[in-house]
Length: 231
Image (spheres, rainbow, N blue to C red):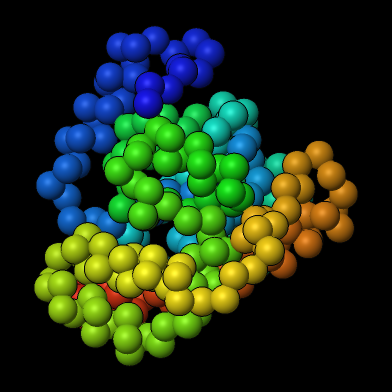
């Protein structure tokens, strides 16, 4: 499916971005993409929180929005809560929103969407990512059924390549979709706090933080045996 371009972006600029991403095709650094709507609340908060828990030499964590407020910083409440929950203040303050484009989605090893709507949008841009795209709460719910030892042994069987190890573990988590009890669909979404009260931001963070913690556990179990990458 061909995506529409964000306002003011030419096809040449899109092609240049794609080429820049493709230039890293041989890089074994794992790519984790967070997706929400404006890229000023949920997805950058998830990005900053996960960055604080996972070694950046092993994992590149970034975010984008399906209708991003391009170049805008995180909202103040999102910044405050991210730092309160352990994110690096410099990462939080330096964030600027960007649009979710096809090459960004297609370059990822795994995509964590903040809602089912965002998951659908990411898969429409990059259909090959269907089985590697989750809402972050869905992934956390499914992965919580797997012990760290099980995750590690699955990764070990895939070899030493970080991307291959994560692919094997992601496939294992995907298999849990048919093995776990279903939940009401809305329970896999993170509340959107944008332009809402501080209380709503805190409720959103209360859903997001445990999900990020579970993602971090999975990444550490999958990649932690690699020397000089994840400590």
